Length: 300
Ligand code: SF4
Image (cartoon, rainbow, N blue to C red; front, side):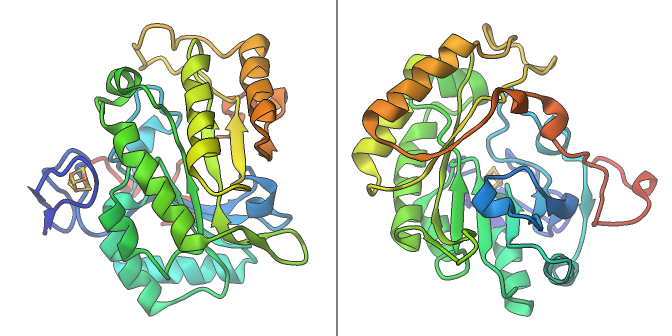
């Protein structure tokens, strides 16, 4: 396959197991973990957990990524499309409130094929960096019920520094508008679990509160009223990140400044407790739910 699935527009050759594009992904799905997950927003995780399927590789690869092993190093196991469909079925049988596809942009054709083999009776969540093309998102229309995109930065300088993607917001803005168009206003079941809708996530970075406010301006000015926002304060520096200023957590003052701005704009949604600002909420990427013996697996 010659690939142009994401804004990187590599037009790279991708074989089944590996590819020569920016993401390095092949066409077959590669997973690092597939298990019930309890640390998403309450309307996604609920009491029984979200059926989170963590895909390896990434089209953005932020310097501060909390999941560096799978996004940058591509730790995981390559599986068949049929095996992916079987994972959707198993997670559904385990009681997952939804099937939560985490960073799957580079595997859109395989995901759609797996969903054609087994369509779970629970909502499908598309959990993404926001760095998407509207064309690829249109392929997902009707297959995805809930979008859970990040809007990371507005500033091209910041997204260039963090991910070598000065065009991040130029793509993320129309992508999130397209997500909202597809899902319409949020709907919930009687237990408060989201059935359809788009939740926009934003992680506050240290020293970047002005850019966070520009993200909130975008949500307020350009997305449908009532679009829920998930404001995240869990930024935790990783040793591999060499971007100046990103070597510390955010301060209470920084969080309060952005949170107050959100309130002033009249936005609503989900807000993290300070206690969540820890890497303990990152699950172990050890092939849980993908394959039994992790030691069989190698990086590509
Ligand atoms: S999905 Fe991967 S190969 Fe395809 S355009 Fe994006 S980075 Fe390139």
